[in-house]
Length: 276
Image (cartoon, rainbow, N blue to C red; front, side, top):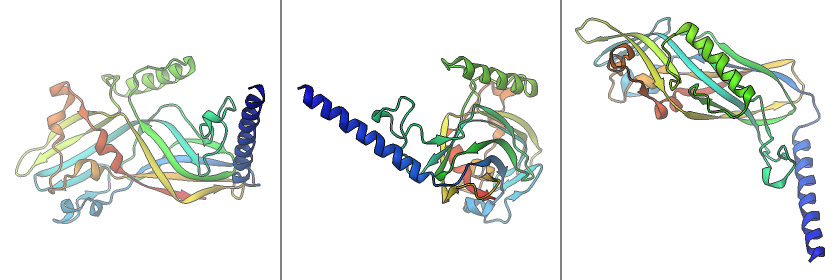
């Protein structure tokens, strides 16, 4: 029985060694590079389909103007809480923190960040979320989360980060609910009607996974590079029938309610541009 146990242990060690070797080989021989992650509004109304039949539905801002069959949605401000940004290696074969076979793949991600409060420029200017020195290797996917700032972290350091971002948000928008993940303000003008202002808080808990095509190879060949995520708000607010979402129905000052916005969020993040 002891012999069998020893064979089992040797087998585990052999698997672990092979996985470490694979991870090292996939990393290449080059050095790390500075990688910046940015977000930008990229207006492409033609991607929405029927909503674009009557002509251009989006006008680069600020503000961002979306025209539909039921009226015009004018967006003056978009803010998001983005967290846990990660770059995932293509091999996905590194050992976990405790070097156990059970945790294979858990330690192959780089660039993980805490929550960030983004005020998206509506004129298409990129806004940087962060930059990090990324080890050599081939990366196939960018992941991040849109989430609220409810402090459910057991880690004290994570809790401190959340508290700092919450303070930043409340300084800008004092009535921001803890459960909110985003904010949109502007006006809706119905056909043959007068404009009405709205302030809408978005409630969403969603992980976005975007493929890097082609894969991003970090080999020390450049000093730095940027990965820019394109966001198309038209996809959020233009509906398949050609109408726009009347956001005045979700005005927080009037209703005290937030807009549930999980599924819609995912489709608005359309592509990643790689520079450098």
